[in-house]
Structures are given as structure tokens and as C-alpha cells.
Length: 528
Picture (tube, one colour):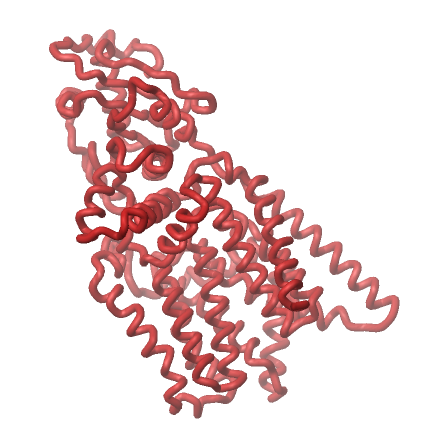
């Protein structure tokens, strides 16, 4: 009971700090706008939620088609279902609102940090484990992951849990611990493909810890069998599961420049001081291992996980820096080990060193918070609210003209706040053009404003959200021209507080027989 109470206390304190960092970063004010993936994750989780709430009707494809006809950025298949099952379960309990989902990420982050603290407490004194937790929580990458509906924090938690299970197996050799590793590794792979980072862990740690003979044990290979059973069907049969849509970016190839790039990124995240301490701790572990000193298997697990997270990014082209959140606990462990070696001594000297370490720790944490930028507000939340709250726009389809991030954020706003399936939210990148999954390989569908207007006339009444992203698609200029040439048939709506100058709302009322303006006068139309 005392141990459980201590864990709950650490979790509660971590959760309060995580929420405070979210508020400081603007997570509860902005749209799902961190990346274009964030809104796609939300809409896909909403799809799973609605399917479960509807009684899981079959065939699934019919429900999927009906949903994506209105909200097109659901992308299950490209990403595995694990994160969406988690989202759906949370939505069923706490609702689908943005604040609810941001709170979910705070809870995941708090569990991740608490688990890190509690595992490191078995290896290091509690003050060092708590220090690791504070730096992990305040690292810029961790702050961004906590305030974004993205899979990095759940993945980091699952990778940590799988590594802990394997470390337990190395300590006791029991099949139950090996099986637990296989189950958690499968959960990681069914949450995100980056779970493959766990694959080299068993053989490498067996070699590094002098347990090579365990390779002949059936229990050693039990995780592989579990992964094949639990994950094989998804990756072998589900369309998009092998990331076919982004295969043109490159599959397995060695990118040597990624190694120093990743090391520089991790150094920036944890500050050069902590990075130097981590190098020192790693060197101390290697020295002790070469001397044959008895070491906890956790050190070999940490070294392998840190090396694999860096090397996998060097051989998988789509492995982004944000995926390296899973690397931070291992670096912090080695950094704390080095500080512990330095902070030895007796009496007053030990207290002075301890005080300096505490001051440095708090300074680094505050610095991390100060240098992390706030989440971007796009103005699409307010603009969508105008359309949703206007009686005359009830049920009117919406054409969103923005970049991929803006299109997804706007789609999420409508899906979140109206009864589903509601109006169709049409992303201009697929309606007015053809693009790849990531917005590349652009091809316009309309050659001029006249042909674009022919398409718009066929839609009937249509609302257009005309955004001003930093790098707009070419069809944005074509849409502005079409509105100018046919200004009498368009009505500009109020954008809503907070969206002025960022997003314009235009309503096409389907007027027939309207004669366009002459080009020389159309360009004088104010506000276009």
C-alpha cells in the first residue's frame, strides 16, 4: 500500500506539471495544428469511436466510406489501430472535445514519466530518478508530444515498458517475462511502425550480458512467435500498413548523415551539459563492462535501446526526429549515473555538490520551458465556429483552401463539433488538385478561374474557408481570382474573433445567370 501510494503521488504531481506545461504551451487554445498528422489522428480516432458507438456495424468498409465521404483525412491502415483504440476508449468515457483529447495526452505523458522514474529508482537513488523525470517532462520534444495528439508519447511508453519486461527476463530467465515482452512489443508495433526498434533488443542484450547460450532456449524466441501471431495479419494484409503511399521517400537505405544529426538533436533536447554527462555515463558503463564487473542488465538494455533508436533513423528514411522521444530516458539514465559518480563524498562537500546539482537541474528545467515555442493558432477554429453556429449555413458543404495542416485542422473542427455524419468538408488539395500523401507531386485539376467556377456551380450552396498559410497551393490564387471575377455571386461572412486577417469565409449561393466582372475591374475587389 505504501508503494502504491508513492506511485500515485508521483503520478499526480507529474500530471499536474504536464497539464501546466500544456496550458503554458497553448494546447487548449489552438487547433490540432502541430503537424498535418495531428488532425488526421483525431479524425481517425473519431471514426473508431463512432463505429464502436454505432454497435460496430458490418461491413466495416461501408461505415468507413460513409464517414470518410464527409471527413476525408481518416487514415487507419497507414497507421496501425492501437492509438485509435486508445482514443476511442477515452472518447467513450470523457467525450470527443479537444480539451478531452489534450488531457488524454497529459495522462499518457504522466504515465510515461512516472514509469521512467519508478524503473530508474531500482537502479539509482530516488533523487536521481526524480531528476531524470523532471528533465524528461520538460524537454522541448516531450512538451510538444504532450500537447499534440500524436503517437510519440504512447510509443515511448510502450517501448519503455517492453524494455523493462525484457530486462526482467534477463534477470530471472522466466518465460512469463519473455512473453510479457512479446505482448508489449506487439502493442507497440500495432501503435506505430517505429516499434520495430525493439527487434534487435533480445539478441544484442543476450550477447552483451554473457547470456548467448540463452539463444537456444524456447522462451527466448517466444516474443517472436507472439509478434507474428498478433501483428502478422495487420502488416501482411491491411492496405497501406507498410506505408506504401510514402514508399517513394525511400525504404531501407543507409543515411550516414543521420547519425550526427540525431546526436545533435538529442543534445539540443537535453542541453549540452546533460548530453556530456550521458557520454560520461556511457563511458563508465563500458569501462565497468570490460572489467567484468557485475552489472544490472538494465544498463545493457539502455545502451542497446539508445543505439538502436539512433541507427534505425539512419536506415529508415521516414524516421523523423520527433520519433526519438523514446531515446530520452536512456540518455538521462546514463547522465544520472555519471552525476552520481561525481557527487560522491562525505559531509559538507557532498551537501555542496548536491546543492549545485539541484540548482543546475532546476535551471535546466526552467530553460527548457522558456525555449519551447507555443502551439500555433491558425484561426480555423474560430472560422469553423462561425459556419457551425450560423443557422443559414446549416448543412452547407465547406471547401477548405489551405495547406495540408490547415485542411486537416479545419476538418477536425467540423467533425468534432457537429453531429456526424454532417456536412461534407472538402479539402482543396484533393478536390481542386491531385497531390501525394504528403502534399508533393502537385497537379492542378482546373486550368483557370472559369473552369473552377463550373465545378463550384455544380456544388450548389457552398462555403469556402480561404486560409492564408505561409506556403499556399497554386489553386489558392485561382480561387481568389474566381471570387473576384464573380464577386456579385459571393457573400463574405464574418470570420469570428481571432480569425480576422487569417481566414476568409465566402458563401456561394448558387446564383444562376450571373455575369462575371471584367478582369480589369475584378482585381479591385477589396478583401480578396
